[in-house]
Amino acid sequence: MKKVDFDSVHRILENEVKHYDVPIVDLIKIQTQDPFKVLVTTILSARTNDRTTAAASKRLFEKAFDLQSLEKLTVREIERLIFPVGFYKNKARYLTQLPLVLREKFGGKIPQTIEELVQLPGVGRKTANLVVVIAFEKPGVCVDIHVHRIMNRLGYVKTKTPFKTEMALRKKLPEKYWISFNSILVAFGQNLCRPQSPFCSKCPVFHYCNRVGVVQSR
Image (tube, rainbow, N blue to C red; front, side):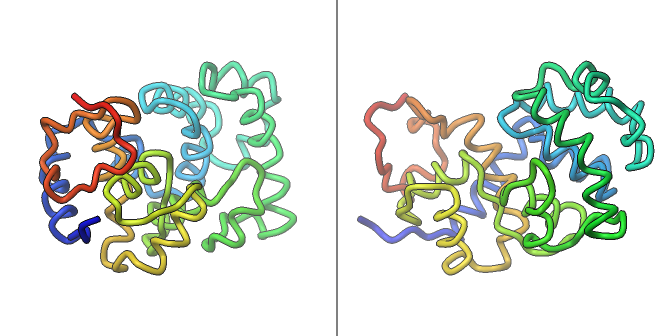
């Protein structure tokens, strides 16, 4: 297996994804760095396509623009506002719990560390890393299904789960890429490097990739 030149991969893909639709990760950053809105939007985005997430966030923020206004909404009201995001009933429940947990544990403020953020309802490591990166502009290693798949397909890491991918990247990936690499790989994964039958014939980093696990491509 050839060694992956990630410096070149990052440079090429950074230019490539400029032609793609903006992922929700970048859209959040463009629209706001308000920690409350970043946190809520990233919670909604889990297992949900970007267009649905953006529309649901817009509806919700018209009624709940901060923790105080969110606390006034019932679970049913939130469900109606965020439908049809994935697992909307669970997410509505998490959002109703959020103001109380933040007030009791963190003085009503959004915490700035991954270790604290994962104590919040509905927040896993991916969400926590995104909040740290987008809202607080601190380095974080955000690993979703696209990042996990592409980094393994490239042969840059050899891991079985997103969590193990995050841990491997924290050791191996130069910190200068921590803030930028997620949105680049998400856009690339949504457009070319698909889970099934990726568009290898159109891939600008084909010659850098070990194509691990690729059985059929286009």
